[in-house]
Image 1 (tube, one colour):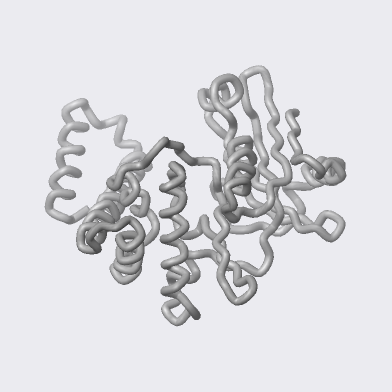
Image 2 (tube, helix red, strand yellow):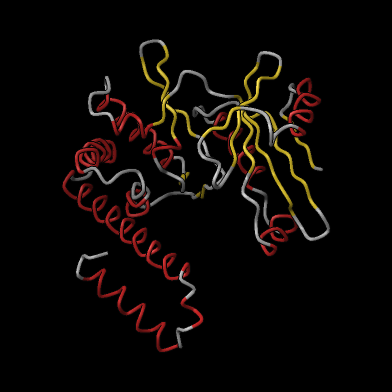
Length: 277
């Protein structure tokens, strides 16, 4: 077992190890646990968030042991990096990896549970939410600052931002941190494509475009056009992925010849061209 705990927090080590023994049966589950399993545990009055990452296939298990940092390690290190740069994210506590001779078998990221917060998805979905437009603009300003710092947050989806009101203002906390890219500088197209997964709501996209164009110093119309374009592309990708999963579920690989695959992908292409996918 590899156990790395944040400086000054070694008093939690024994409690964390004890919690792992009851992880399957204890704690409060967040979400449905279909992919990653996230649970909250009370450790002597402190609520900690334990995230167990999905089991990898045998190839990725080997890769994450010998060639790449695990998702748990990246989450831990990126959280420290963001805090050092004065961004908001729940306090990182520790990460744990278990290995066998093949590779990584399981990994956990442990952070402080953020109390009294809502997801950005909740704010976007509630048109009567107080200060909704202002929060959207604050989110956009956060993304602009990340981009200026050369940080591309790849999991830029509304459930990965937690909103908490503090001293009559809103703080936006980033979670699910393991997928980020870093650059010396980020061009405009890459910046705007980063919004592709945040929403399909034209009203929200317009607010984002208005705020980002103001901060960047470009035409609002250009900004709106590009974000809308990237959002549509992402929507098409999701629909194609659903179609592919459906065909996989039916196990049509057994009856598809090479020509059949070509015809199937050609069918998807024309569906996309016609706006049907």
